[in-house]
Length: 318
Image 1 (cartoon, helix red, strand yellow):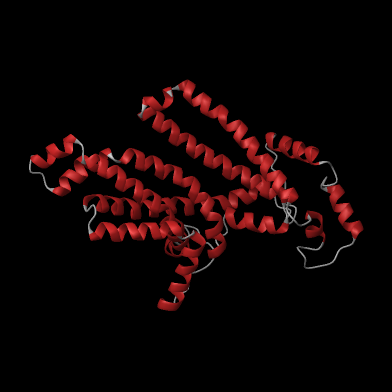
Image 2 (image 1 turned 45 degrees about the vertical axis):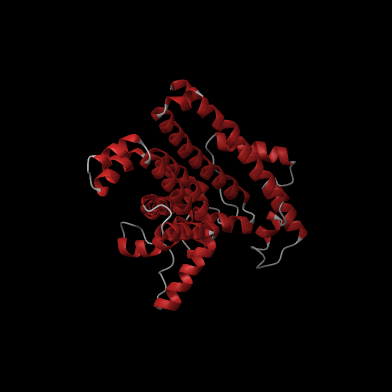
């Protein structure tokens, strides 16, 4: 098991380097000039060529790309995350401020996905090929085909038009005012969670059908146990391993989905900050935020893999 964990940890290094290189190159080849964005204040003012040349020199943007990349990477290795080019704030302070918002949204999104998917998948398996099964599968596939930004827009539209209520925008801390916090976070979590639940519901249905065909389930039925006892006591527990594994991996997808959801619902998390940084060509913020999000995703995947390898020895031996 130790060799398996070390091997997985070593594999994270080239992946992280690959992400940093891709992010760095993509931001440099995208249309737009970071120096111009700084001098003109994001297009609000005017600047001269001399001002832009001065900014490029101050930020080392006039250096070759490989030198810029190595300098940035060396600062990261020394845990110097640098400052935002636009706000001037230390990036580490931005992460401390915004990460709790994104983390809460991601956790609530996965919980929402589980609450929708597992009952749906279990009911579909127990009522296989009936009208209920067909309807619930259509609802699941519908969620799979709708991107979260579209679902989020529909939710906002429905709340305003049908209920004449607009959820409070922004973010209030969970311990500051739990009720307002829930009103702000639950809708983006529902938008992304509905999308994620489609995958999880399909997995739950398929796994549940497989478990229901096992001999020990037939034995439980033959003993005259009620459906509730067979499902909860025997079937549900044995179908949870792949479902829980997929739910863990979905935390990574929920973090990706938070970029869109935070923008629609104006939640001041890392996703909203990342969108703003891209618009302003704030390279240090973009590169560092992408690195942090990638690191979180890799840690979650690593924990899921280690748990799976611990539960199933065939995984770590392969």
